[in-house]
Structure formats: C-alpha cells, structure tokens
Image 1 (cartoon, one colour):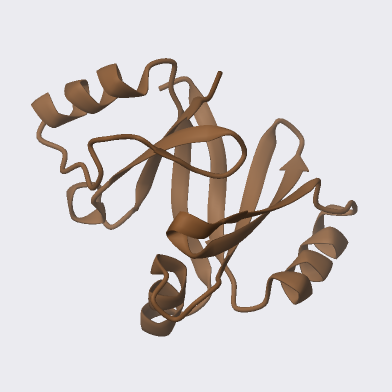
Image 2 (image 1 turned 30 degrees about the vertical axis):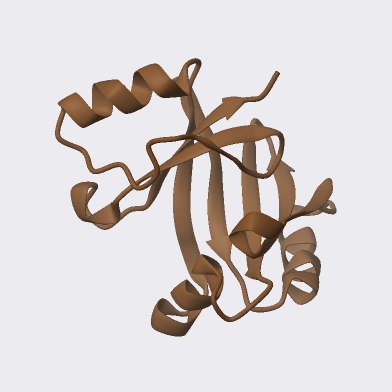
Length: 133
C-alpha cells in the first residue's frame, strides 16, 4: 500500500455537506460523480496531499443508505492506493483478510476498487484503489 488515497464519509445530503465541508476546508469540492452500480453519489475535496470523499446513497438499498440507517452519518471507509490491486488482494487473502469483492470494480474518481470486510480490520471498512489506465 502506497498511501491513504482518501477517507470516505457517509452523508445524508450531499449538497448540504458540500457547503459544510467547503466552509471547513476553505475551498469547494473539485468533483461530483455518481456511481450508479453502487447507488451512490460522491463528492471529492482535496485537503493538502489528502482527499475526502463524501458519499450519499441514491436509493434506500445502497450500501451508504444502509450504513446511515444503521450507524448514522460519519466515517465510512479508509481507502489506500495500490499499484497492483490483484496482487494486493492475493497478498491480503494469504494474510487471512476477508475480501468482500475479489474482482475489482469501477469506483469513483477513475479507480478500480476492492473492499476488505471490517470484521477482519478492527471494524474499519478498508478500500483498495488502483488508478485506471
């Protein structure tokens, strides 16, 4: 793993949250994107060398909507950048981590993504991200 790619925060209202976080960071988001396959709309902020991703569910069955219904708004996941997502998945499986989706899927911000089950990572949903070519 190269670095923390971003921290994902689940929000109920992306528009209101964009205003809130723009005030907090002193600058607006740089991108809004919908990932229809995941039922989520995202917004990204750059904060120094780091990124914050706000996530709003677009339907009641989306993972973000279910997360908010169960736990409320807040930190949803931490994403780590990797050079080769398939190699990293194999390495982590050998280490005993539970991979939620072994086949990488297209995520937001031009990334291939895989998630690790939070039960294997002290309650933290971990996302692996590889830049798509």
